[in-house]
Image (cartoon, rainbow, N blue to C red; front, side, top):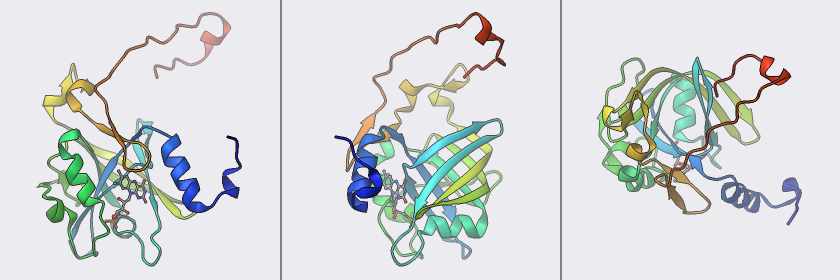
Length: 209
Ligand SMILES: Cc1cc2nc3c(=O)[nH]c(=O)nc-3n(C[C@H](O)[C@H](O)[C@H](O)COP(=O)(O)O)c2cc1C
């Protein structure tokens, strides 16, 4: 199959995109409204953008009649927390993805515990072992989405998922989003050592990534 994505109906393009571009990490984003309602919702159009400064990107689509609570809250407060989703909180994350009224807190609906953040106002999701407290650096409109770039001003990692100072996938048990209602686990880990290239190209600046 070869197609021009702009020529297919929106719904089909969405289904093709989310089933083909896999697996996606899930940014479980917590925010707080101007009136103090704690909000959280999952977003799999998310990515790491930069390491130093540490910047994450989260893309939030428009709703038909009103903005998603996450969009409104981030634009109002310029702060959010990205919490990682693990197998143990997958069901709660799914509950939190419902389209609840703005005055309903998904923390309470899903039975998620709040943990205070150090620098930003939105609470962290205590049940998640990795939390990035973010300050908005830029919001960019892309079609009917707003992409929020946030600089992590605090990173919290539960010591139980660390090995030698870095996050150990085998301990973390993160889940990824696939197409439709499908998810994947991250326990089938394998390793590859990158080639060391010698010769003229090695004159490039050192790149450890
Ligand atoms: C695993 C998962 C990933 C999702 N990813 C996105 C996404 O990347 N962008 C988006 O706009 N909505 C995404 N959603 C839907 C939002 O979570 C949903 O619209 C939610 O109600 C938004 O909540 P809010 O109004 O509190 O911000 C996703 C839902 C699930 C379950």
